Image 1 (cartoon, one colour):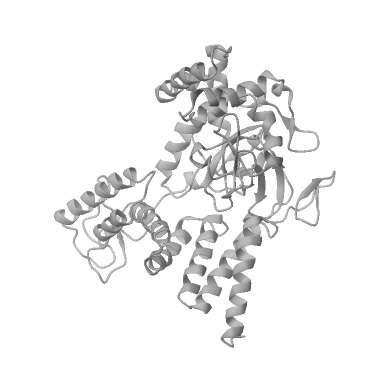
Image 2 (cartoon, rainbow, N blue to C red):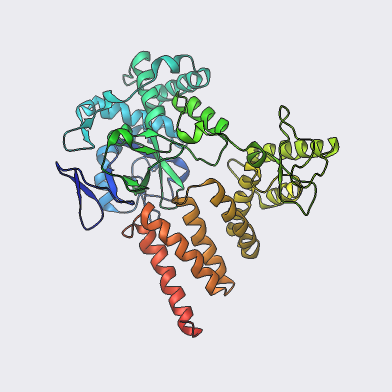
Amino acid sequence: MMAENEDNHYIMHDKKKIVPQGTVIHQEKPFVYTLSSKYRTECCDFCFKKTTELLKCSNCKYVYYCGKICQRQGWGIHKQECKNLKQISPRILPDSARLLFRLYKKLENSGDLIKAYYTTNKFRTWRDLLSHYAELKMDKKRMEHLTSLYGVLYEFSSGDMLPNSAEFMGLYGRMCVNSFNISDQELQSLGTGIYLGASIIDHSCQPNALAIFEGTTIYIRTLETLPYLDWSKIRISYIDVLASTEERRRELLEKYYFNCDCPKCLEPENNSEIAGAACPNKDCDNSININIDEAETECHKCGTVISEEFKAEFNSVVEFTSIHLDSMKTTTYLDVCKVCLKKQKGVLYKFHLKHIKILDLAFESSIDLEAFDTALEYGLELIQCYKKYYPEIHPLPALLHLKLCKLLLYKDMIKEAIHHLRKGAEILKITHGCSSSLYRNEVVGLIQECKMLNEQNGIK
């Protein structure tokens, strides 16, 4: 079936063969893509490279490139929109409108004939992608968005012919359901792309593969050893799995129009842990189910009675946290996170999902503000939460291990730093590979730094 080459990529053969964990089973350039306007002055519009030395398009003065090569290579895409971007300046075109415009122009130039192969003889074309036309027509929120985008593009295109309403809805539906968030090596979303070949892969909340990006190229890597490559059994996660089953299924239904029946969604869930209270007895580490239908009246571990006052406080803290999580979707405030964490202490269980999400925001915000002692405290608590909810092989815990390594080195805690570096490196070898820019630039650098510090301190 496949044979391994030096870079742990696989090429097709007739004979079935075991596919090792961490193997790249597919890589692909995007059919169409666009950089988020949020990063248009920080990243190259063509390759998504982050740099402080960007060249601005001399005509529209909207698009930036990291150099002449990317500017020349990107012109084939950009020339379709350049005059239009100049015309609407200084206004910013919504990202989804820009992607739709690029899609329309791509298909206008025979893009519907492009074949993206995921095996030697199997491929996907634009028409193979599902539009979920019927579901889309019943989706009030998306229909309002579609109508708004049509108005924006009508003005943007300066009277150029746009597709009719049915065709436009088909474009929009395929874009919504089949788009990938193009992220950097640290999983920060930089833009959106459509990958025809990779679109064959279905979802699971317990995936056996994942999508990683180098620039705009997508790599599908295996998270576990497979007896052979069977594309009908390859699964990636479309969403962040740090959520309850109800939340995951609702998000998948709203965004992708299907009910998830993966093993993780079908197995029983411990509501007292993911959404429960901490036992009021400070000497007890048990979780309490406060759910109205199944509310516990006492701790089954220590026997502490759960008062109505405690239940009221719990509900108040959950509501308070929810309000601030919603308000911090775009901007995080460390002071707000600290207030939430203070209110949660002794009330929300340590693995309550809302507690973890606030803790995550507080950790990242502390690093941004260079409050490294505070960040280390939050990070050490957060890694235990990640172990609870993320699988053993997942890039987010790996990235957290690297950040903890750096924070511990800052505190001259070399032994502890090396522990987290090893943990992170072991995972990243599988999720990203040793040849990835993340591993080469971050992991190798930290290994060298730890080695040097060990030698200076006489540690073998």
